[in-house]
Image 1 (cartoon, helix red, strand yellow):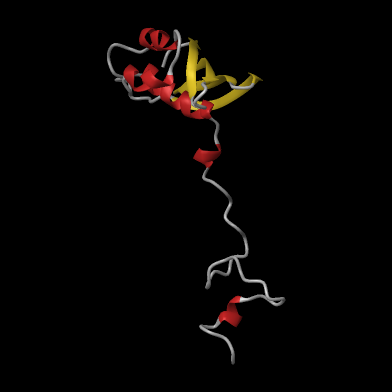
Image 2 (cartoon, helix red, strand yellow; image 1 turned 90 degrees about the vertical axis):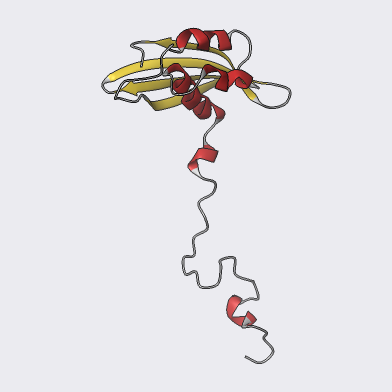
Amino acid sequence: MLGTIGGEAARRRPGGQARTRPVGRRDPRRPAGPPRALRLGPHHWFAERLLAVVTGLRPVHSLLGHTIGPAYQQLVTLAPSDPLREQLRPVVRRCGRFTPGPGVIEAFARIATGDRMTAMAFRLEQGPDLRWRCAAIEMRGPRP
């Protein structure tokens, strides 16, 4: 090991290329990328937040800066006056989207509460500041 400082030769591959994994790591795979929550689109984030407001888990004003047009008033009418007291908590089972044009997402979510299913549809519009805002929301089926 003449001419090496701190075992530098041990960290190099044949051909002179440096390793990209930390010393002592034997797994040759690279990290899988960003966490699942960061790979999901804005429609997933909105589906979870809208469900929390509609079920009474979050106050309506928590989405005040995230809505435009009549969407806030629609949330006020959909949200219960009393917080959710049921033992079964509704969950988003599936969330999908359709992009009719740039800066617009029309999304849906299937909400399950025990054996009951509810459909939620909402429209997201991207503003000039590149933030997504909910422009409309509609729910069908048994309410959570």
